Amino acid sequence: MISGNIEGIRDSILAELENIYDYEIEKGKFVTEEIINLISDISIHINREINVAIDRKSKIIDVAIGDSNSVELPILDISNKKLSGVRIIHTHPNGYPNLSMIDISALLKLKLDAIAAVGVTEAGINGINIGFCKLDGQKLVHEEIENLSVEKACNFNYANIVEEMEKNLRKVDVVEDDREIAILVGIDTQESLDELEELARACDVTVVDTMFQKRNKVDNVFFIGSGKARELAMLKQIKRANLIIFDEELSGVQIKNLEAVTGCKVIDRTILILEIFARRAKTREAKIQVELAQLKYRSGRLLGLGSIMSRTGGGIGTRGPGEKKLEIDRRRIRDDIHDLKMELDKIKKNRALQREKRESSGIPKISLVGYTNVGKSTLRNLLVEMYPGDNTTKKEAVFAENMLFATLDATTRSMILPDKRVAALTDTVGFVRKLPHDLVEAFKSTLEEVSFSDLLIHVVDVSSETVIKQIRAVEIVLQELSALDKPTILALNKCDKATTEQIEMVKDTFKDYIIIEISAKDKINIDVLMEKAVELLPRTLKRVEYLIPYSESSAGAYLHRNSIIEEESYEGEGTKIIAVVSDEVFNKTIKYLIKEL
Image 1 (tube, rainbow, N blue to C red):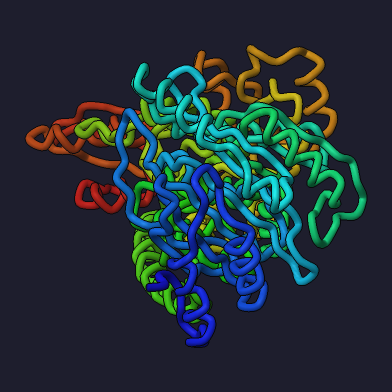
Image 2 (cartoon, rainbow, N blue to C red):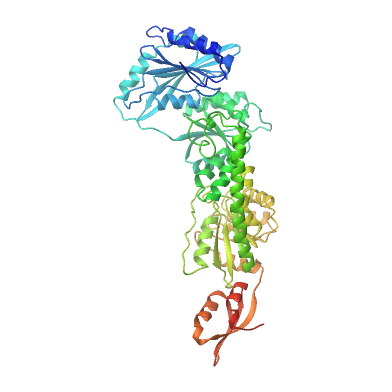
């Protein structure tokens, strides 16, 4: 019985593979040359992996056919104190004998005695790599013996390694290590690579090394060239990394080729950012927007997404929308994209209705924009606390943490400005260099709040060494949203941490902006910021005269809370008040109106 993906395989080939069950393997031999040659010939002919499982009695217990990237494994009995008693020999029709991330994952999770990968091409066998389980303290790791000939692989003395391993397993309680340990690769700038490390940290990834290569032209096959790819494969082994992250966007073919050479899961900056968004999205709208961006990204990269699309890979790049299977197709993705867009349109209409209500009330709109992790949410929480819009209810503070993309869900809260006007304050998702275009597109329904704002407060971490580049990156996104010409205050946050030179450099570079130095954490110059905001916001206020009956003193108290009182006197019929009010206050108190001034 041949298991796995046998669709489209001729009966004669299946019969030939069926004969493997009758092959005998001498005691002490890892496998036979006959088995290796047979599965290699068929594998290259059908361009699919072929897998043979052998137990310790040297009996073949399973033969399976996979696709070009993975193959099914038999169900095994897994124990804490011993190995599974099964060794796997399988082909790699991509020509690379090194163990893939999926191979290593299967070796460790199934506690295989060993796993061997046979690299095959039209020209023949390229070499055989054999992997074994090994203990590093209480953690299970792998050891790989590389580039063996067919003869050496067949006669490899694996029994002693297995016996020693099981002896060690009986002495310890193995702790499973699910950490993702990464090497970062970049060709742009060191600053961009440093930011990639911050993005990785936001995704709970441990970075063990970086590789920087300054090059003007990327390699279409390996992005960094075949030589550097092999160097990366060696570094991955030395550092025991299980993830490689590129700072630039990779094509599906480049991902597939790099994974084949390095034997490791490979992702790019875009996948990492999408993963962060997938983890942080809380509202239905944000989740749909992330899902839409992920599907659009994947739709153009179905060719050769390798272990990213694998069901056994796990970790970054596997979380999120759509089918998790390798056979996911473009038609299904297109259907999903269409459904998500329809749902997003409904949410967009509701958001538009809410915005129309705010516009009809004449409430000025302020949006906080800026690079990710510069303090927007901290400033938003402080402003809502210092200038609460509703004294009867305490709104929940938005999540503010020292990490990239802590806030994804745009929130709008009311606040009372120093001139007593009510304003709507919106906190938006942070921007970043090389923000994926699909993500900007998907989040436009949220980000368009910026386009309808009366004032932008562009929050900047002035203590950052890359502050100028961060401001430019935000300007690019604002340009895309047609919001670059909005009245804007450049709020230099964390001014207490910055040097005088850093602050002056920003002021000299961006002379066209209104600039205010603030610290949201230490409440420095927040009053100055709000006074300037009041000055820049459009005025739709009216100067009016009221007569409030003594029996309705609550109306007078309402005016004191929500308007600017210029004069107040006590007459025989009630309290006479001259005040500057907004349209909303004017409409609510019109029955006490004497005249507009």
